[in-house]
Image (cartoon, rainbow, N blue to C red; front, side, top):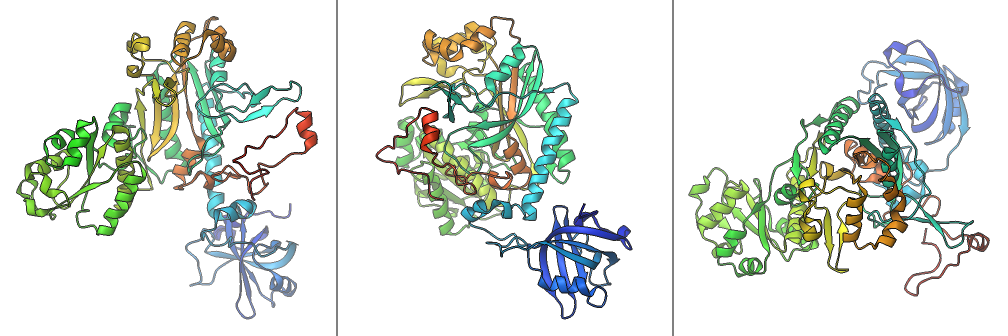
Length: 607
């Protein structure tokens, strides 16, 4: 090999050794007669010294070097002179005195700095992804991802799970998002679908008697993207037979406790994992994926609003709405501009506005609060007793700011959830080195689609209803709770799962409620319904998202920073230029023709 040592591994114990290194020129410095370069490979950086009196040929070669050139260097490891050590580098106590240097490949000037973690336009960093991945932060993220996946594989294998691969080309069935379709050349007019998850396949593996299955599965969903969502993603897919909900939650808590403590020991993990029902999560945090690194729980002021003199609140309550809010600690004296920013945020989530009540000065008691100490444009519409009661419910003290939203329940909760997250960040309450997992349980089995006037699965159609709610299936579907559960972490949903239906009669009842005729259910899901008649065991599973978990552990705000080759938010691959047009010959082979809608541009998206 061209190298026998990794750059980032050299320490004082290597002093006197002759080593062969290879990597990229991270930085070059000419100090008037002596040239220093920082040489980088994936293990780290080491300083190399070129002295013309020590190795003149190597010095002449080094004089031509520039950033990102690929070189091979042979030299001797020496202790750095006293006072020149670099404590920020693991190799900072040593340097390599070059004896020989070979240029393996020069480099054009990169389109952005690689040796500085400066901001780079997203289009540029995706177009030159192979260069952006040279940055040490990105390499650390991919190394972390590797260690997370390896840990999961080893941990599950030691507990009797088998890793089984399932097909990528499968049948289009409703899973909650649009499918990516693949046309069949051999069967004109027919299509495969890329799996949104291996859901039905892992259930069939349970019918097959495998009992404990897992897979690091690639999944595909044609849906609108955001920072924590990609069109293709990776999940730990896991299924078990002869289990109940508690068995799977306990397994996940054990797995992720061990993972965080062993793979990222610098993180602070809260144990045991908190558990909330869906109703509790919505009531306390306005969302089913709350960030539990801080408090600021929501309080319900609807009954107080019904009695106050503020006509806006009273009208909301009369129309069946709610009035809720929370207390931001120590935020009473925030500038007006920040209140306007918070109001804009609330409106972006559908709220009609935001009401704030600044509660006096710190050091006072809540009971001693006077009307003159309550600062708000609507303060005159509330008695001091009503303000004090709202403060008590929200856990507020003098010096705090009450943030209140009124409206339809779903919109109010969404707005307050966004405000709570924003305030957690502004007040520094969301510690990036703290990891708080939690389980959310008892989700509704169905959601009402008002536009199409029909019931839809809140999770997916194979989720089992809670036994005590089975009598409500046809009578009152909206009240039926499911055996579904999510695992959330630091404000993200990082896993979703459920106990599955394993009885044909129950599954057919679910399909009827969802609007499938017996013929359509047989056409779409006949393979699964038939399997349930051959001794299907009780089973359930969960699917943690590898990308999101690594994103949280790496303290990144976007999945794109922990995926080697991600897509843009508009689902484009700027490196390869995908999606792209294909030749007429390929279309003919697939018996396809492209018909451009009048409202859409023809041709591929701009690169």
